[in-house]
Length: 119
Image (tube, rainbow, N blue to C red; front, side, top):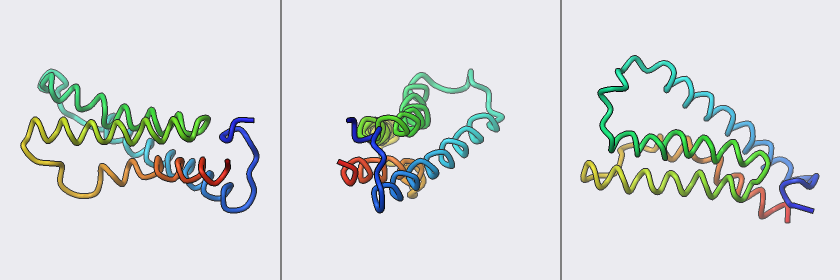
């Protein structure tokens, strides 16, 4: 049986549900930022659109996928965050400041821990 489809007990179950709940919170906050933004989409450069593809869209997709496939969802979200950081560095010459991008992606790490615990 697939590890993400099993019914774990104890620590594995707790980590799984903490990952799921925090993923929902992060997706909700990211969605609020995207919907609440008053900016003009025509002012966004093509390079910025590519970055937006990875964060927040790719990260949110990975966090959502983690509900069914913890390993794949976690890897997708973390991979998208890494690509976003690299693209930002190439465009701006520096990495994004502050821990916020990584914090929004942190449920992905919990998904990977849960997948490991539930094997």
